[in-house]
Length: 164
Image (cartoon, rainbow, N blue to C red; front, top):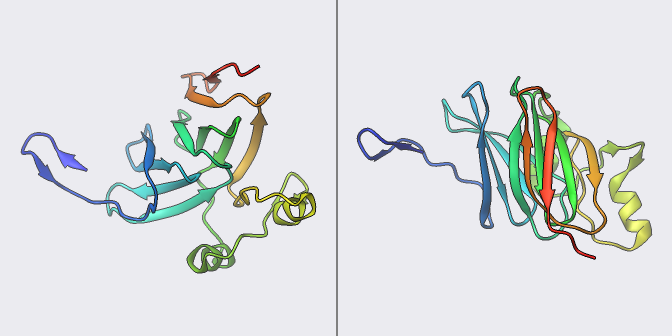
């Protein structure tokens, strides 16, 4: 983060292990969301520079766009995996989830009524395991989603490439 009046670096946010592909500052100015091409979203406290959350759920190809709702409580993400995902950014992580993220073990949180890691294992796929912050997922018909945007009335617009 840079002070544009003086040209000095004010804060450095470290934590991503792959290329950062999207950034979005919350409307209340307190939180920065960053996304990478590995499908991770990190939430940062802009005052302290501390990482508040790490959210996962997108598949391969990464995340290309992020957008906050007006209240700064919900984030939407657009992925090359052909999904638009909705994230709860207010709920704090439980101690168990923090441990899982720190150790790198997949979370076993329930999303959509079924355990995501168990469902992926049964299908024999290496799908990304979604963290508990995932509210909803809207898949396309195999088309990557390159841009999402919340409107001032909390509607979400999404755009992507048509892939017949």
